Image (cartoon, rainbow, N blue to C red):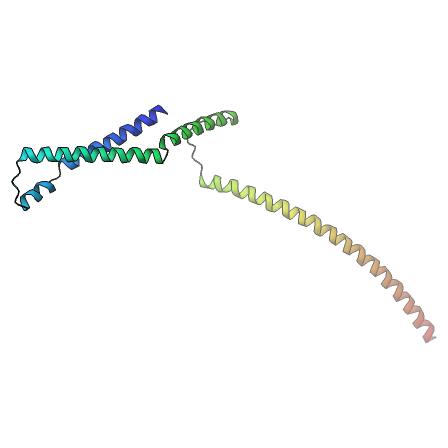
Length: 165
């Protein structure tokens, strides 16, 4: 964690030094002085630029510190470090090596497809069982109706025989 804070500090310091260097190399102030007809010596202009640069860098550093504090960057580094430790511990428990593991898109898609297809198949199996039960009930109903129909046909045929005789 301290290492991350140090890296952040170093990065911000490098940025402000670069900013200061750019300010010092700026020729706009010299051009403005010449354009307005002011007689300023180079060493005076350098002193003015140095003072302006110093104040600008202080202001930038102050704003960067406020930005770091407002966004809780240091706290987030700590949270990230804690998450990294928890991930390493979980990987050890699961027996997975620590580090980046490339997942082939086909494998990744295959895992999602297999989970989805298992859900679909189990739902389809349940629906098949339900339909089989309904089919058996309908077949029993059909058999009983066929039996009644056969009895009625036998009665009608016997009545027709008696009528035609």
